[in-house]
Image (cartoon, rainbow, N blue to C red; front, side):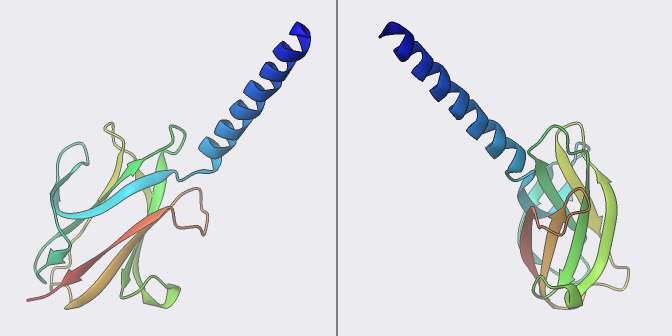
Length: 138
């Protein structure tokens, strides 16, 4: 009887361990995507907002969620997130020591007014890890 209880507990613990390992490996690798007016030296967002003027620099930051993900791809869209709306693809964005993937969008002639989106991809996959949206208005 005692051996059966111990065996059952061990099997349950193994199943729970496999479940959490699977969830950790297959879960989101990048989280908490935001746009802001600036970022600090560690890539952390400062002055988070979703409203910009055409002459603003738009900073994007997203928190890494897996220790093995060191590089990401950031894609900027004018409008909804779809391939036809891509206007800038930034490859090999490296994670900062603070655990953030960050980049800045600066257009010398200014951004057009409208709705924009930013998405993050890892490992060359076509699956969006996370995204955020913002508006540019005068």
